[in-house]
Amino acid sequence: MPEVKKVSEGIFEVVKDKKQLATKNLDPGKAVYGEKLIPVEGIEYRIWDPRRSKLGAMVLKKFDIPLKEDSKVLYLGAASGTTVSHVSDIVSEGAVYAVEFAPEV
Ligand SMILES: C[S@@+](CC[C@H](N)C(=O)[O-])C[C@H]1O[C@@H](n2cnc3c(N)ncnc32)[C@H](O)[C@@H]1O
Image 1 (spheres, helix red, strand yellow):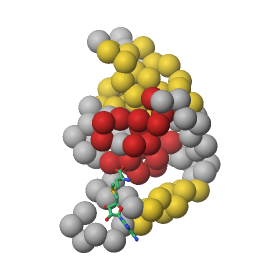
Image 2 (cartoon, rainbow, N blue to C red):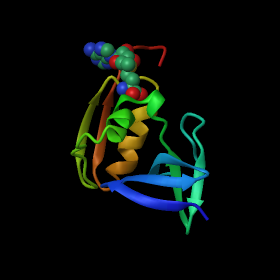
Image 3 (cartoon, rainbow, N blue to C red):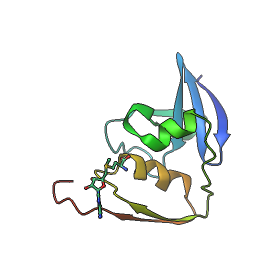
Image 4 (cartoon, rainbow, N blue to C red):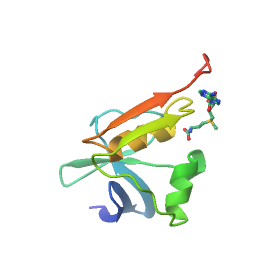
């Protein structure tokens, strides 16, 4: 059984073979960008790859991420949604408004 430790509000470390950053999947069963989904005691965690997300890397570097369950976030430059999908998991009782202007993404 993987071990889960809380890193900060809505952000976790899942230990299964190795330590991996994760958020609780707000949409269980669905991966956004091919990330691993790991169920632990009835909760599904989505692995958050800090090599693909500056915000994820900031969490690993122990920056204070001032997001709360009920935060309302204006996310500028969402690209294809990798990081903003984890922000959405974190603010599960709040809202995320994501803005992106590139038609390709
Ligand atoms: C480095 S990518 C963002 C990656 C994303 N934040 C993530 O971590 O998954 C920067 C994005 O910002 C978008 N962008 C830049 N200027 C913008 C603007 N003025 N309005 C909306 N999106 C913009 C770009 O099109 C690009 O997709």
